[in-house]
Image 1 (tube, protein in one colour):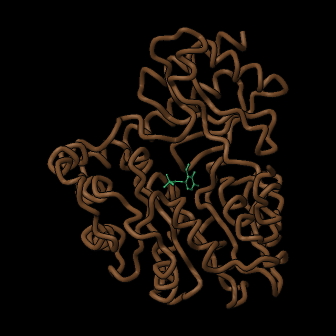
Image 2 (cartoon, rainbow, N blue to C red; image 1 turned 135 degrees about the vertical axis):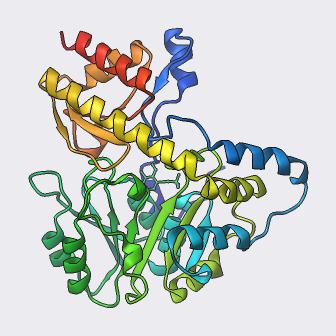
Image 3 (cartoon, helix red, strand yellow; image 1 turned 180 degrees about the horizontal axis):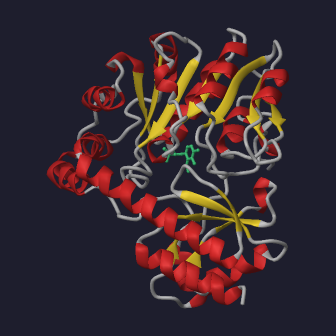
Length: 364
Ligand SMILES: Cc1ncc(COP(=O)(O)O)c(C=O)c1O
């Protein structure tokens, strides 16, 4: 018997490749407690307020959650400075990206995606039968705004921009974002992914949230996975003009955000101490890592996020593998076309120190 045939475009989609799990490396190399610096997770762990909320609500998981996640949307609207009806909650921001693709892309449409960015944009767009128009980065690995503008045509339905971008860590300045928005036609949805927006220290960063009141084409996505330590629970947001949110709500799976995720999300958004600690830990850790790379003479891309892209050179794969053997999980960037680079998520001070010492030893 032959397996049923998928839609014709499905077979050509490469599955998402996550960072390696601690358990896998522990087992493979017999290491008791590997250090994971591969998936841009929160090094402090989860928000303690979120943990308490989970404890308080765990006896209620026999009940369906609020499908509209109203309390969480109200809390998010207060946090992000928008109206409740401008917010949708997803099972991670990945789900919001998926909903946007399903709502706006028809087979044969195209989606504009910078060449070096978060891989799920391409997967979710292709799953709708869309064609990807990849736009090369500029010489400094920045998103090339002019090339994005000139790549748009009548068939373009979504432009994807991560700001700041993963895996480069670079941001688009407010001026460049305004210029881009001023040049794109009305029929294009601009998905501005701000998964790392709270980590930016650049004065010229401007959140897409500042534009949504006047610009009905923008969908800002953001997440509690990184800044609030809830990656394992999956809580992400889409924030946009009501018309976009209404469209996404029409096709959203019922009860998409589970009960514990909703309660933890509400508590985490109120946990301002945890967010402050997170930002301080990440910023100090980033400064430590960058000064270490300078001392080793390693080139890196100055980052506005909680991870940094380091140019290790031709031997990058073997440096990555040596780090794995030493129990430190980073991300080798060949699948992003950056075969000389590894990406490192900022860890706790002792983890950052271990990483620098080990890289120093590997590079001699
Ligand atoms: C740029 C970017 N967007 C979205 C996501 C997905 O986040 P979530 O955990 O909210 O699905 C990630 C995760 O690594 C990311 O790097």
